[in-house]
Length: 200
Image 1 (tube, one colour):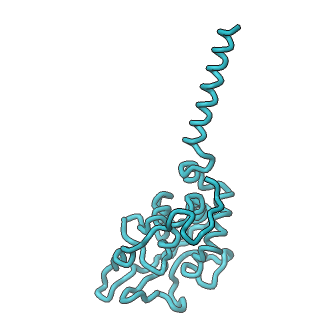
Image 2: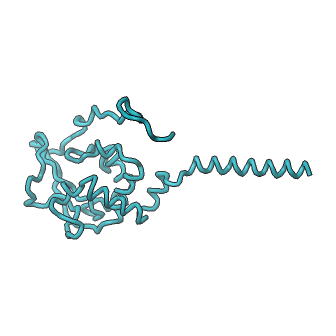
């Protein structure tokens, strides 16, 4: 009886230990899980909210348009008021962020789109120029960022619209890297003027 109890106790201990380790290694919403199923309706709906509301992507990529419009998020269109943007001496054209493979982000991997928001780099490793607010978006959670990726990759229709290249007065592509050299990450929570309420 004692031997059976010791074997059973040992087995239960190993089972509990394995469960705890498994929970720590594979959280419910890990980055890997989120990036592996970008057709998840919950991600796409969250992405729509962020793109159309809090992120206000349409303000540059689809001025005065709604998701009903056939040019939704297709980027710069000739005749758009106040575009291209004049950033210093640079002319900046809002890009086509629909999943069109030739003129949009359809040929980009989900990870490359994620990198735009987290590190401010396009698929060629070039720094994204203002007025793209990637320096703000970099503080979004993984879940929110993957939600935006899901909406842009799987939640909207591709639109063929070739946007001109950003240019300098010399006709070259601008290097906006120096504009973001002094970015500071958010301080750890709680900050000195915050009241800590989150559980660890």
